[in-house]
Image 1 (cartoon, rainbow, N blue to C red):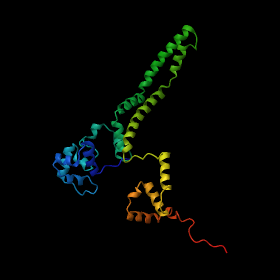
Image 2 (image 1 turned 30 degrees about the vertical axis):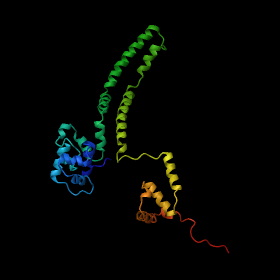
Image 3 (image 1 turned 90 degrees about the vertical axis):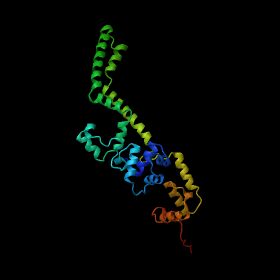
Image 4 (image 1 turned 45 degrees about the vertical axis):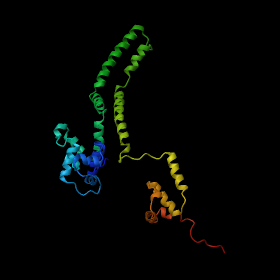
Amino acid sequence: MYAKLTIPERLKDLRVMQKHLTLEELAEQTGLSKSALGKYETDNYKDISPFAIVTLAEFYGVSTDYLLGLTETKNHPNTTLSELHLSDAAIDILKSGKLNNRLICEILCHENFRRLLVDSEVFVDRIAEMHAEEITSIMNVGRLRVLEKNGDVNNLDARTLEIAEEVDKHHYIEGVLIQDLLSILNDIREKHLTDSTTADAPYTADEAQKKIDEVMNFKGSEREKQLFLVCNQLQIPYNTLKPDEKAALLSAISKSKILGKLGKHGRGKRKHKK
């Protein structure tokens, strides 16, 4: 599910993604200080003055409620439900929190959504089937005339018309709907590749082998190998760790019931044969 943006994330998103401004440029255009603007976009910010909220909301063209995280609507804060023509059931579902409303909005806003909706209407209201039945009736009349003319049921024209009558119009329109939906979902899927909520791509065989080789070729003690393995899995650059950081991680690893046992096999005193 999509994570709700925090106030700092909203401010940075509006500055970088919408206005494409640096902090210096934003400060010049709003009259707010660069240092204050920078603090507003950090996770450990404490407070934003009402003046700054109003100023930034006006500058970005969004509501103050959006900047404060009270709504996800940027530009239509006063739109009434009656304007959306939603049923009570639809509103209940959207407010339930059980659906990915972000994905619903992305599908709705896709350029091919109208085609999907029109094709859905064609399918639900049996419009295509009605016309298909009319065409089938015409083809049937044509086939009968061909048969009356030459009497050959295996005549190419007669057989073509007969097969055309058997085309499953229901499955055809289902295929159209599937293609409409897939075109939308594939586009959104591509846009989500850099999204923090999207799963990382799995390792290829070559990448997995490279990881294994790195661990196998690592030079160091058993404990250092364990630490390197953990860093490798967590994507922590091993060579950037400071000695105290390595010591802290090694101490934590030593308490692992799995990793703590590695390297201990074969140790201890051996009994000498008498």
